[in-house]
Image 1 (tube, rainbow, N blue to C red):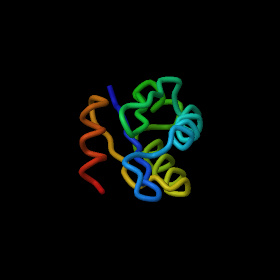
Image 2 (image 1 turned 120 degrees about the horizontal axis):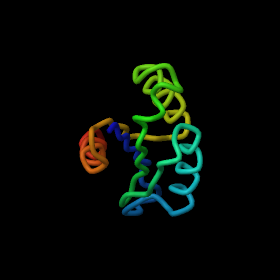
Image 3 (image 1 turned 60 degrees about the horizontal axis):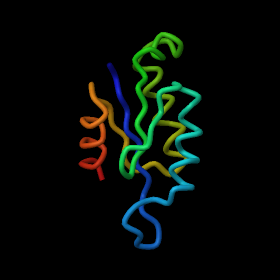
Image 4 (image 1 turned 180 degrees about the vertical axis):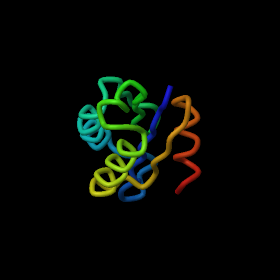
Length: 93
């Protein structure tokens, strides 16, 4: 499996992004896979099955990185598990 975690910055000193911000990011992420979930303060995507559709892992990663930065994502990571991806996204602050 291949999971990605996307983290948004905290606004106005809030401890985590708002539900509306997470919902909007999750809706955007549905273009890559139907397996999207909110995990704590992040959005996680299981994208292994989608890699062929996007012509490989690298092409999918490049597209997610480019488009997510336009949405304000500050933490982005990839790992074999959702919790691993979340841990890496937290560490990439």
